[in-house]
Length: 136
Ligand SMILES: O=c1ccn([C@H]2C[C@H](O)[C@@H](CO)O2)c(=O)[nH]1
Ligand SMILES: [Zn+2]
Image 1 (cartoon, rainbow, N blue to C red):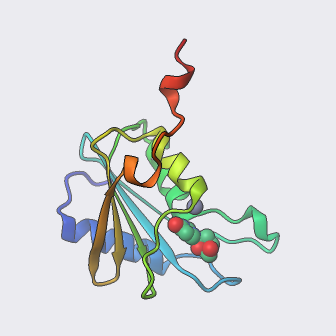
Image 2 (spheres, rainbow, N blue to C red; image 1 turned 45 degrees about the vertical axis):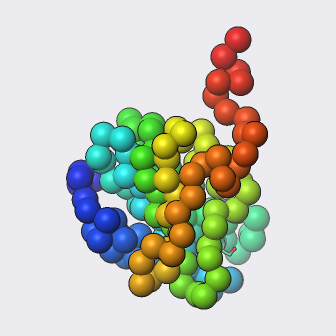
């Protein structure tokens, strides 16, 4: 995927991912865009399923695309929802992001108008369990 986008372009990417979300059951569209430490960019959308628990979140799709490209350090992740409420990542996605986060990773919660609030990983998942805990 293209590298070195500015914030405006990253927001547009999250928006276009959100537009392609497959959400026949919730009708709740989410898009995510990741910029890695090396400047590569990836995106994902939520993909629901007739067997409801098999649906996947936008963040999971973007992370899968990032890992497929051989990248593993998230610098910024933009998560965009459509409504008035802030769409902060679900508990499962906080842990998914944590796997590829550093102390500097910024999680930007967005509406189609832009960034509404920015968190650090430790704000969303304090006292987290991560790869270092398995390094014995
Ligand atoms: O951060 C979030 C929160 C929810 N969803 C999706 C899951 C489901 O398809 C829909 C409603 O929960 O939104 C995401 O993709 N990311
Ligand atoms: Zn999630």
